[in-house]
Length: 237
Image 1 (cartoon, rainbow, N blue to C red):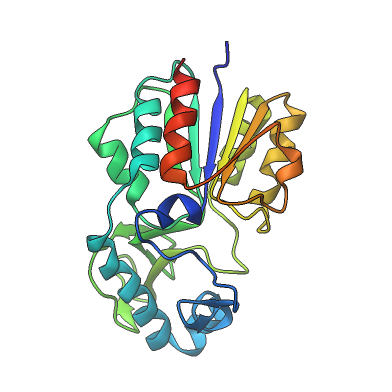
Image 2: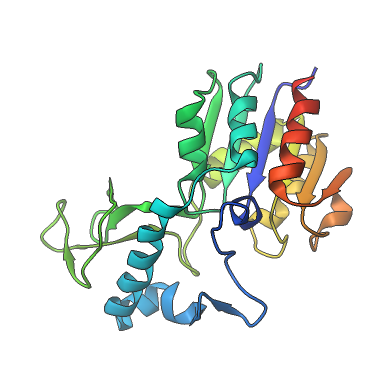
């Protein structure tokens, strides 16, 4: 029986809730160049622009809600008999809200590898705090007089969170599922190969084949809100 499950989610799972995907075909993220809003250098150069960009994203969280895909994974976490690591590349809190509605069993862990929009981080100490309001360009940190608060987001050039925990889970997993990811951004794009080395069954759910679709044993294409509940039904069985 499959016991160790790792699920990776990307922008595609939240798109059905109305959350914009990370990057459009023109290479812009919500009208901005990545280099202007999603790098440490951008924050140092223009903290007003960067803070305002994430302030707008933070405000939008009140208008979006978990969809059927988020709730299906929460239902699976409430029943899965073994270890279940849910790794999300998304910075929204839709997985968190879904699991608050349907509490998971022991052995479940949710890991935001690219950070969380509703948290702020001290630039001096690295400590984080829940944050739902706007941040000023030079927002005083409660942790240090020498630091400011910035979004708790992993920007380009920074190391994703929880990689040791993720690699350990992948080396032991029986089933690996990738949902709504392009397969172009590393290290996440390499997770399926790590799972395959562990002998895991690998499954992709996406609107269309990703860049690494050939690495999966099983593929399903369509909206996450439709395909994920169907897969969860089979996994529970």
